[in-house]
Image (cartoon, rainbow, N blue to C red; front, side):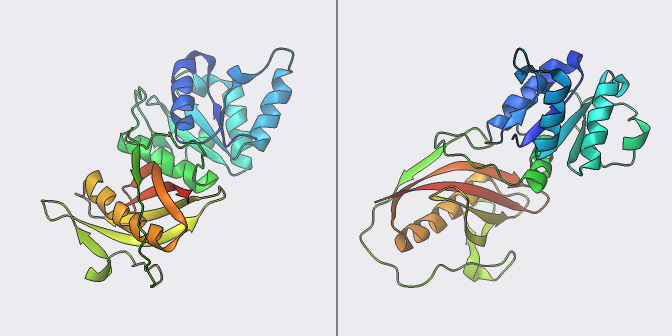
Length: 255
Protein backbone atom coordinates (compact mmCIF):
# COMPACT_ATOMS: atom_id res chain seq x y z
CA UNK A 1 0.00 0.00 0.00
CA UNK A 2 1.37 3.42 -0.97
CA UNK A 3 0.82 6.68 0.86
CA UNK A 4 0.34 8.64 -2.36
CA UNK A 5 -0.98 7.82 -5.84
CA UNK A 6 -0.21 10.32 -8.61
CA UNK A 7 -2.72 10.62 -11.45
CA UNK A 8 -1.44 12.35 -14.58
CA UNK A 9 -1.46 12.40 -18.39
CA UNK A 10 1.32 10.47 -20.09
CA UNK A 11 2.68 13.62 -21.73
CA UNK A 12 3.16 15.13 -18.26
CA UNK A 13 5.44 12.29 -17.17
CA UNK A 14 8.38 14.58 -16.38
CA UNK A 15 6.53 16.67 -13.80
CA UNK A 16 4.87 13.55 -12.33
CA UNK A 17 8.26 11.90 -11.91
CA UNK A 18 9.74 15.05 -10.36
CA UNK A 19 6.85 15.26 -7.90
CA UNK A 20 7.10 11.58 -7.01
CA UNK A 21 10.83 11.78 -6.31
CA UNK A 22 10.40 15.00 -4.31
CA UNK A 23 7.72 13.49 -2.07
CA UNK A 24 9.76 10.34 -1.52
CA UNK A 25 12.60 12.42 -0.03
CA UNK A 26 10.30 13.30 2.85
CA UNK A 27 9.57 9.69 3.72
CA UNK A 28 6.23 9.07 1.99
CA UNK A 29 5.78 6.12 -0.36
CA UNK A 30 4.57 7.14 -3.81
CA UNK A 31 3.06 5.12 -6.64
CA UNK A 32 2.68 6.19 -10.28
CA UNK A 33 2.06 3.99 -13.28
CA UNK A 34 5.66 3.52 -14.56
CA UNK A 35 5.94 1.18 -11.58
CA UNK A 36 3.59 -1.31 -13.27
CA UNK A 37 5.51 -4.54 -13.80
CA UNK A 38 5.62 -6.50 -17.02
CA UNK A 39 2.76 -8.98 -17.25
CA UNK A 40 0.45 -7.07 -14.91
CA UNK A 41 -2.97 -5.99 -16.15
CA UNK A 42 -3.03 -2.20 -16.36
CA UNK A 43 -6.63 -1.59 -15.25
CA UNK A 44 -6.42 -4.05 -12.37
CA UNK A 45 -3.21 -2.53 -11.04
CA UNK A 46 -4.54 1.04 -11.31
CA UNK A 47 -7.75 0.13 -9.49
CA UNK A 48 -5.86 -1.70 -6.75
CA UNK A 49 -3.41 1.15 -6.18
CA UNK A 50 -6.17 3.76 -6.25
CA UNK A 51 -8.13 1.83 -3.64
CA UNK A 52 -5.19 1.09 -1.35
CA UNK A 53 -3.41 4.44 -1.47
CA UNK A 54 -4.01 6.89 1.35
CA UNK A 55 -4.37 9.89 -0.94
CA UNK A 56 -4.49 10.64 -4.66
CA UNK A 57 -2.84 13.69 -6.22
CA UNK A 58 -4.27 14.57 -9.60
CA UNK A 59 -2.12 16.82 -11.80
CA UNK A 60 -4.36 19.08 -13.86
CA UNK A 61 -2.76 20.36 -17.05
CA UNK A 62 -3.95 21.35 -20.53
CA UNK A 63 -3.55 17.70 -21.50
CA UNK A 64 -4.93 15.93 -18.43
CA UNK A 65 -8.23 17.84 -18.37
CA UNK A 66 -8.96 16.15 -21.74
CA UNK A 67 -8.04 12.67 -20.47
CA UNK A 68 -10.93 10.42 -19.53
CA UNK A 69 -8.53 8.16 -17.61
CA UNK A 70 -7.34 11.03 -15.42
CA UNK A 71 -10.87 12.27 -14.83
CA UNK A 72 -12.02 8.76 -13.92
CA UNK A 73 -9.15 8.34 -11.46
CA UNK A 74 -9.85 11.75 -9.93
CA UNK A 75 -13.55 10.92 -9.62
CA UNK A 76 -12.74 7.60 -7.96
CA UNK A 77 -10.47 9.35 -5.44
CA UNK A 78 -13.04 12.08 -4.84
CA UNK A 79 -15.68 9.49 -4.01
CA UNK A 80 -13.25 7.92 -1.54
CA UNK A 81 -12.61 11.39 -0.03
CA UNK A 82 -8.87 11.28 -0.54
CA UNK A 83 -8.33 13.55 -3.56
CA UNK A 84 -5.74 16.35 -3.56
CA UNK A 85 -6.07 18.33 -6.82
CA UNK A 86 -3.04 20.26 -8.09
CA UNK A 87 -3.10 22.54 -11.15
CA UNK A 88 0.24 22.69 -12.95
CA UNK A 89 -1.19 24.79 -15.80
CA UNK A 90 -3.71 27.60 -15.67
CA UNK A 91 -6.70 25.66 -16.91
CA UNK A 92 -10.45 25.50 -16.55
CA UNK A 93 -11.03 22.35 -14.53
CA UNK A 94 -13.54 19.67 -15.50
CA UNK A 95 -17.02 20.59 -14.28
CA UNK A 96 -17.18 18.17 -11.35
CA UNK A 97 -13.91 19.49 -9.88
CA UNK A 98 -14.42 23.22 -10.28
CA UNK A 99 -15.82 23.62 -6.77
CA UNK A 100 -12.87 21.94 -5.08
CA UNK A 101 -10.02 23.83 -3.43
CA UNK A 102 -7.18 23.28 -5.88
CA UNK A 103 -3.54 24.01 -5.19
CA UNK A 104 -1.81 26.07 -7.88
CA UNK A 105 1.73 25.07 -8.87
CA UNK A 106 2.11 26.85 -12.21
CA UNK A 107 5.28 25.95 -14.12
CA UNK A 108 6.62 24.01 -11.12
CA UNK A 109 10.15 22.74 -11.80
CA UNK A 110 10.80 20.81 -8.62
CA UNK A 111 11.54 23.53 -6.05
CA UNK A 112 10.90 22.30 -2.49
CA UNK A 113 11.00 25.76 -0.90
CA UNK A 114 8.09 27.55 -2.57
CA UNK A 115 5.10 28.36 -0.32
CA UNK A 116 2.83 26.49 -2.74
CA UNK A 117 4.83 23.28 -2.46
CA UNK A 118 5.00 23.65 1.32
CA UNK A 119 1.20 23.96 1.28
CA UNK A 120 1.01 20.74 -0.73
CA UNK A 121 3.09 18.98 1.92
CA UNK A 122 0.70 20.23 4.61
CA UNK A 123 -2.32 19.04 2.60
CA UNK A 124 -0.77 15.61 2.16
CA UNK A 125 0.05 15.37 5.86
CA UNK A 126 -3.53 16.29 6.77
CA UNK A 127 -4.75 13.30 4.77
CA UNK A 128 -1.93 10.77 5.14
CA UNK A 129 -0.25 11.82 8.36
CA UNK A 130 3.42 12.77 8.86
CA UNK A 131 6.01 10.75 7.00
CA UNK A 132 8.02 8.37 9.15
CA UNK A 133 11.41 7.07 8.10
CA UNK A 134 14.11 5.02 9.75
CA UNK A 135 16.74 6.50 7.45
CA UNK A 136 18.75 8.81 9.68
CA UNK A 137 20.44 10.40 6.68
CA UNK A 138 17.12 11.73 5.40
CA UNK A 139 17.24 15.36 4.45
CA UNK A 140 15.10 18.06 6.00
CA UNK A 141 12.91 20.23 3.80
CA UNK A 142 15.60 22.84 3.47
CA UNK A 143 18.04 20.17 2.30
CA UNK A 144 20.17 20.03 5.43
CA UNK A 145 20.79 17.34 8.03
CA UNK A 146 21.37 18.37 11.63
CA UNK A 147 23.35 16.06 13.93
CA UNK A 148 24.57 16.39 17.49
CA UNK A 149 25.84 14.06 20.21
CA UNK A 150 24.98 14.77 23.83
CA UNK A 151 26.53 13.06 26.85
CA UNK A 152 25.69 14.35 30.27
CA UNK A 153 25.92 12.40 33.55
CA UNK A 154 23.80 14.93 35.42
CA UNK A 155 20.17 14.20 36.20
CA UNK A 156 17.12 16.37 35.76
CA UNK A 157 14.41 15.65 38.31
CA UNK A 158 11.61 17.87 37.02
CA UNK A 159 9.17 16.61 34.43
CA UNK A 160 9.33 17.87 30.85
CA UNK A 161 7.49 21.17 30.59
CA UNK A 162 5.57 22.55 27.61
CA UNK A 163 4.06 25.93 26.80
CA UNK A 164 1.13 26.83 24.61
CA UNK A 165 1.63 29.01 21.52
CA UNK A 166 1.76 32.66 22.51
CA UNK A 167 2.25 31.84 26.16
CA UNK A 168 4.19 33.99 28.58
CA UNK A 169 7.97 34.37 28.67
CA UNK A 170 8.39 31.06 30.47
CA UNK A 171 8.19 29.22 27.18
CA UNK A 172 9.93 31.68 24.85
CA UNK A 173 13.43 32.15 23.57
CA UNK A 174 14.58 35.29 21.74
CA UNK A 175 17.46 34.23 19.53
CA UNK A 176 17.37 36.47 16.46
CA UNK A 177 19.25 39.74 16.16
CA UNK A 178 16.01 41.21 14.84
CA UNK A 179 14.19 40.41 18.06
CA UNK A 180 12.19 37.58 16.50
CA UNK A 181 11.19 35.00 19.08
CA UNK A 182 10.88 31.28 18.66
CA UNK A 183 8.41 29.96 21.21
CA UNK A 184 8.38 26.34 22.21
CA UNK A 185 4.84 25.16 21.77
CA UNK A 186 4.30 21.41 22.03
CA UNK A 187 5.88 18.48 23.86
CA UNK A 188 7.56 15.50 22.26
CA UNK A 189 5.13 13.09 20.66
CA UNK A 190 5.95 9.42 20.13
CA UNK A 191 5.74 8.15 16.59
CA UNK A 192 5.13 4.61 15.38
CA UNK A 193 8.88 4.14 14.85
CA UNK A 194 11.03 3.24 17.85
CA UNK A 195 13.11 6.09 19.28
CA UNK A 196 11.70 8.68 16.86
CA UNK A 197 9.72 11.64 18.21
CA UNK A 198 8.20 14.79 16.77
CA UNK A 199 7.55 18.20 18.29
CA UNK A 200 6.77 21.76 17.23
CA UNK A 201 8.40 25.14 17.78
CA UNK A 202 6.11 28.11 17.22
CA UNK A 203 7.69 31.20 15.64
CA UNK A 204 6.93 34.73 14.49
CA UNK A 205 6.41 35.31 10.78
CA UNK A 206 9.88 36.82 10.39
CA UNK A 207 11.68 34.08 12.28
CA UNK A 208 14.61 32.40 10.63
CA UNK A 209 15.13 28.66 10.53
CA UNK A 210 18.17 29.12 12.79
CA UNK A 211 15.95 30.71 15.47
CA UNK A 212 13.70 27.68 15.56
CA UNK A 213 16.69 25.32 15.38
CA UNK A 214 18.33 26.94 18.41
CA UNK A 215 15.14 26.59 20.42
CA UNK A 216 14.67 23.02 19.22
CA UNK A 217 18.18 22.02 20.31
CA UNK A 218 17.55 23.40 23.80
CA UNK A 219 14.36 21.39 24.14
CA UNK A 220 16.05 18.27 22.79
CA UNK A 221 18.84 18.56 25.37
CA UNK A 222 16.29 18.86 28.16
CA UNK A 223 14.58 15.77 26.77
CA UNK A 224 17.89 13.90 26.71
CA UNK A 225 18.45 14.62 30.39
CA UNK A 226 15.19 12.86 31.22
CA UNK A 227 15.49 9.88 28.90
CA UNK A 228 17.87 7.01 28.28
CA UNK A 229 19.45 8.59 25.20
CA UNK A 230 22.95 9.89 24.48
CA UNK A 231 22.72 11.25 20.93
CA UNK A 232 20.18 12.53 18.43
CA UNK A 233 19.69 13.49 14.82
CA UNK A 234 17.07 15.81 13.38
CA UNK A 235 15.93 13.80 10.38
CA UNK A 236 13.17 16.12 9.17
CA UNK A 237 12.22 19.76 9.62
CA UNK A 238 9.32 21.51 7.97
CA UNK A 239 7.70 24.90 8.35
CA UNK A 240 3.97 25.41 8.48
CA UNK A 241 3.51 29.05 7.48
CA UNK A 242 -0.25 29.05 8.03
CA UNK A 243 -0.06 27.77 11.61
CA UNK A 244 3.22 29.48 12.47
CA UNK A 245 5.47 26.63 13.55
CA UNK A 246 8.41 24.44 12.61
CA UNK A 247 7.87 20.73 13.16
CA UNK A 248 10.87 18.54 13.91
CA UNK A 249 11.21 14.79 13.62
CA UNK A 250 14.09 13.55 15.76
CA UNK A 251 15.73 10.15 16.02
CA UNK A 252 17.44 9.38 19.34
CA UNK A 253 20.24 6.95 20.12
CA UNK A 254 20.12 4.92 23.31
CA UNK A 255 23.05 4.37 25.67
